[in-house]
Image (cartoon, rainbow, N blue to C red):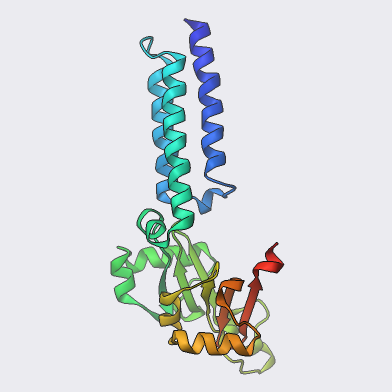
Length: 227
């Protein structure tokens, strides 16, 4: 019996490590709720099987293999399909835009103002007046772009009136136009194609990553540079 339990724990640990590898190299804060469920359920499989004499090592290996295979399939589908990724992983949501709270976005994400303030304080900001732009990530963390005067070296101390920071938009992701980001930026696909031509890009499929900011302009990474 003791040998059986030891073997179950050993192979269970190997299976858990394999599943974690399938999730990719993510920090704990980057794991989405769906990723977390993967691990919780796998842990339940192992817990039930270790002390149940009716469950053999082969049963555990079979369960881990099926579960790991399903996770791998889902991760592949998530990588290949934006719709599938949004369905399972969710998508980021802008809660503060140009210093103003988007109440509809708060309600959509079931977040109260006090919860938003807690997320802000976790990032080191204690007032809405300090924030220019804030995005709720799929992991549940808040990414904050502070107002220029609230940054580490405060221009206000030097009697300088700086221009406000502007958020960046991911307009091209792996050779495809991000229509939703274009809409957020208030731009059209025709504008994007025209501006990219000015940057020397004739085919959008050649761009691995393309972000745009009203203040900075384009930052482009072609597929050649990625390779």
